[in-house]
Each structure stands twice: as structure tokens, then as C-alpha cells.
Length: 74
Image 1 (cartoon, rainbow, N blue to C red):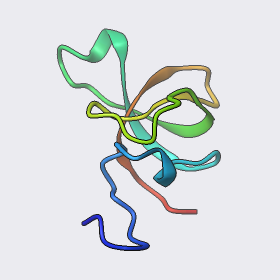
Image 2 (image 1 turned 60 degrees about the vertical axis):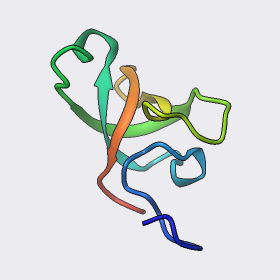
Image 3 (image 1 turned 180 degrees about the vertical axis):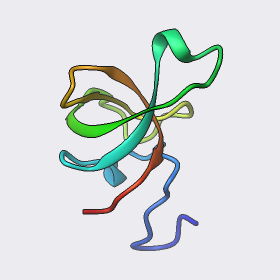
């Protein structure tokens, strides 16, 4: 993982995340359990290029959380 032009599916690199991408996120209230929520990225909220806990996004549903897994690369 992490080679040139390769996408890391763990959601920790901002360049791998874009609007319209299907992802699994962990909501703030679910951090203790690690429960994930599936959705489509509407906005990217993290400004830094990488984040150890995942890039923070807003889904089209309005829910906000950190990306744990990228499901599609479209």
C-alpha cells in the first residue's frame, strides 16, 4: 500500500478522498465502539494532507465523522 499512484483504502490521506466517494466513517459518538456508518462524501473537513485517525468528512446525509475505509474509487 502507499505506492506511487496507489490509493490507501484506510482513509488517512486527504488526496485519496473526494466528493462522491463511498466510504465508511466513524461518528464522534461511535468512537468508543468503532461502529461505522456508510455514506457518500459531500465535503472534506480536514485541511491537513494526512491524519492518523482518518480524514474528517461530511456525508450527503449530513453526518460528520472520520473515514475508516474507502469502499469505492469512483
